[in-house]
Length: 64
Image (tube, rainbow, N blue to C red):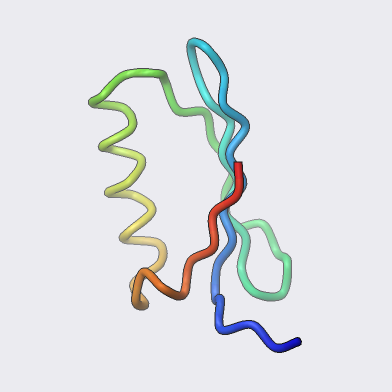
């Protein structure tokens, strides 16, 4: 089965901070980072994610 996804995000939700990993289509890790559990930190992470994945949002798969 062929996928149109260009990027994949894995999220390990925690109570105080979350571990996230962004990978490309080939499975190469672009970046792993910690995201604090706050509105500002989550908003900053989404802004970063949008800059890293400039294609259409439909090119991004997210699993938690």
